[in-house]
Image (cartoon, rainbow, N blue to C red; front, side, top):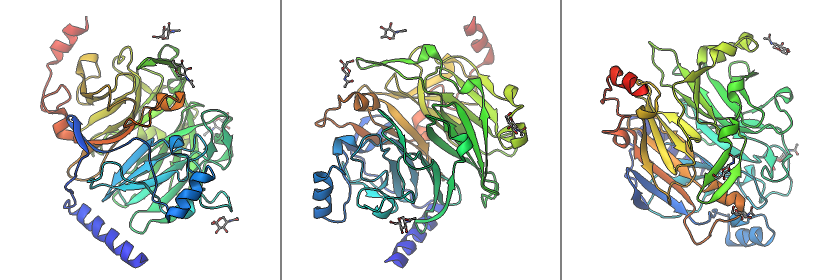
Length: 435
Ligand SMILES: *[C@@H]1O[C@H](CO)[C@@H](O)[C@H](O)[C@H]1NC(C)=O
Ligand SMILES: *[C@@H]1O[C@H](CO)[C@@H](O)[C@H](O)[C@H]1NC(C)=O
Ligand SMILES: *[C@@H]1O[C@H](CO)[C@@H](O)[C@H](O)[C@H]1NC(C)=O
Ligand SMILES: *[C@@H]1O[C@H](CO)[C@@H](O)[C@H](O)[C@H]1NC(C)=O
C-alpha cells in the first residue's frame, strides 16, 4: 500500500516537474470570473475510517460540522491542502486534503497525512499531534511546512495546549521528516503565529529560511533550517493601525486589532534582491524589508530603518488578509472589507491608481482569507473565502455555500488591467495625478 502510494506520488511529481500535470480542472461553477470555483461547501465533512467512526464522532461532540472553518490553503501536485483551526470544539482534524482535479461540488476532506496525527479519533492525547493549524506552505524541494499554533479556543478563551511548532512533511512519501518548536522566549502571552512563508534561492533548498508572523504580539520570527536557529524582529510597522481596526462588512461591525499578517516574497531574481512584503490585517498600508536583512541575526536590534513603507494607502476599507506574488512580480491580495481580490504589478509604483481589482463578488468572495500561487510553469492564483466574521458572530447559514476554493490563471486574471505587466503607465501621468 505504502509503496503504491509513494510510487503514485513519484509519478505525480514527475508529471509536475515535466509541467504535464496541468490537470483538466472541473470547477463547481463559474460565477466569479475570471475565477472558477473548484469547490464550495455549506459545511465541511471528513473521510472517516467508517460510518461508525463518523457517527460516534458526531455523538460525542468530537465532530461538530458548524465548528469547522476552512482557513488556509496550499496547492502542490495533484492535491490541495486545507487548514482547519481548532477555534471551537468539534474540529476532528486540523489539516486535510482534497484532490486538485475537481469534479465534485463539495468533497469530504481527507485528514493529512492520516487520522493518527489528529486528535479526534485518539484518546491517548499528546503533543506529537497537530492541534490547530493556520497556514501551510510548500518549498521548491517538495516539502510541506505546517505552522501549528498549538492553541485551542482562540476565539473565546484561548488555551495553549502544546507549544507552537512547525511540522515538515515530505510530499512524496507524506512522512514527517522534521519538527521544530518555536523557542519559549519568542512565545509571549497571547502570541498568535498566524502565517508562514519560505525563502530559498538554491535548488536544493540548503539556504532555506522561514518567516513567521506573530499577529497578536507583533513580531516577525525567522527560522534558519541549516542549524535550527530562530530569531525575532520587532518593529512598529508590525502593529495594527487603530483607524483600520474598525471593520464593517455585510452589516456586521467589529473591532480587530490584528498586526502583521500578510507575507509575500518577490520572485527569485539574480539581479535583484528578494524582498518580503508584509502588512497588518488591521491596516491600509503595505511595507517591505530586504530578505538579506532578515537573514542576519546579528541585526535584530539594529534594523529599524530597514523596514520600509511602500507607496500610498489603499484607502478606506483597504484591509488586506493574505498576499502572494507570481513569477512576473504581480502581487495578488485579499481585500476583506471589499469582497474582492486586488492586484499590483510591482514594476509600477504602489498608488491607488496602479492598484487593480481582479474580482469582486458580494456572495462568493466574502472574506477572501488565504491566497497562494502554485509553483510551476503555468501559475494559478488560488483563493479560499470563508465568511470568517459571520462564522465568529454565529450567523452563518448552513443552507448557503459558505466556503469556497477558487482559482484563476495569473496571466489571464490581470490581462488588460493596470496590473498587467504589458501595460505601461507613463510616470508623468502618475505624478500629475498625485497633486
Ligand atoms: C504519543 O502518541 C503517539 C501516537 O498516538 C504514540 O506513538 C507515542 O508513543 C505517544 N508519546 C508519548 C510520549 O506518550
Ligand atoms: C466604526 O464603524 C462604524 C460603522 O461604519 C461607525 O458607525 C463607527 O462610528 C466607527 N467607529 C469609529 C470609532 O470609527
Ligand atoms: C538584542 O537585544 C536583546 C535584548 O536587549 C538581547 O538579549 C540580545 O542579545 C540582542 N541581540 C543581539 C544580536 O545583539
Ligand atoms: C452578530 O451580529 C449582530 C449584528 O451586528 C448582533 O446583533 C449579534 O448580537 C451578533 N451575534 C453574536 C453571537 O455575536
